[in-house]
Image (cartoon, rainbow, N blue to C red; front, top):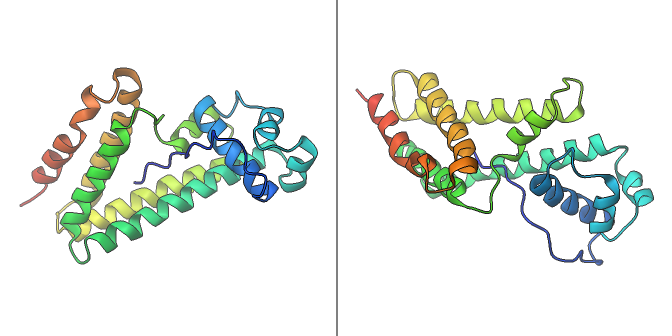
Length: 201
């Protein structure tokens, strides 16, 4: 699955950009860097070069803004799969290796704080929060894509391999936050390749 990490927008807000886009960009950066619970609407409005009244004109609540932030990341992650297929047309094994390489690059990036949607799931345990459905749908869709890709390589148990790779990636992301990119997470590709090889007949 794609990293689903927010891009930094720490530069001063471009006032020629529509207010809604500035608010969403500022919120994306702040939520990812500082955490959803830690960031208030005042800080978002200030970073976006606007005010709370304008923020609430575009988003009914902070919860709705959080959901839209995650929805945008999910859409961006969906494009990754299209690009992966285009880079290795008709070659699922190369696509799977490409996926591993992309995930390794994300985990090794010291500027990253893991998967934004996984982080949000920890911060937002309430099942009725509007962002929960976005998170759950995203993770399910990413797993489905990985299962399909593993299946296309011809392995006998694509769901098992996909789940092994899924859990390997999730663990690598957490490990990178504790040990840094040169700790156990640096072996993501090697371990992933070993898992794939173990499923080949």
